[in-house]
Amino acid sequence: MALASSPGMCEQGDNGSQTVRRSEFVDDLGGSDFFGTPFVHVIETAFDRRLLCHFLPNDPWLLAFLRRVSVRPGMFLGDENVRTLAVFIQEYCQARVDLGMPEFGATESSLLAEFEKWLATKLDDTRDVAWPTLIAADDPGERNVRAFFSRFEEFLRERGDSLSHSADVPWPP
Image 1 (cartoon, rainbow, N blue to C red):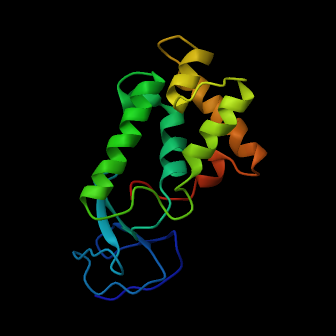
Image 2 (cartoon, rainbow, N blue to C red; image 1 turned 60 degrees about the horizontal axis):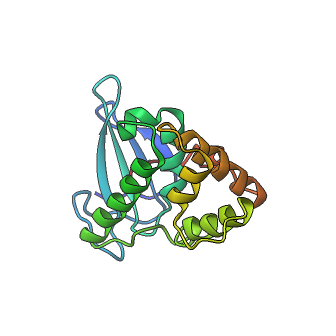
């Protein structure tokens, strides 16, 4: 089966499912290799329909993920602590590496490191610590993931971006 269309497009499939298509040709929907064939993920939708999403290894995923988590962090993480979010991201990156994919999409590889530097400057913190520690120092409460999203959104706005700009990016890749 061969498919081709614009990135992020969804259309109704033959059996009532929706298919997100990429501009690359897909000859084998079950295949996945590092350099060409998109990975295929099946996601259950509300009415037991299936959404087939085709992702390339370098597709961005971080902002789309963070946007979804920001709405209901407890549902994704189990609690609302920034350290839990950091562990989730770290383990998701490790799973991608285990599958032969890069940790982050091509445009996101330095985003968290840049955020960490920005946050340390913003908080006037000279310690050499990771962003979860900086957020925990800024908001020592157990539900401090909201402080992360507030600071991260501020960081993105200064760069001319926003989590809401990732609304059309499918996740999970």
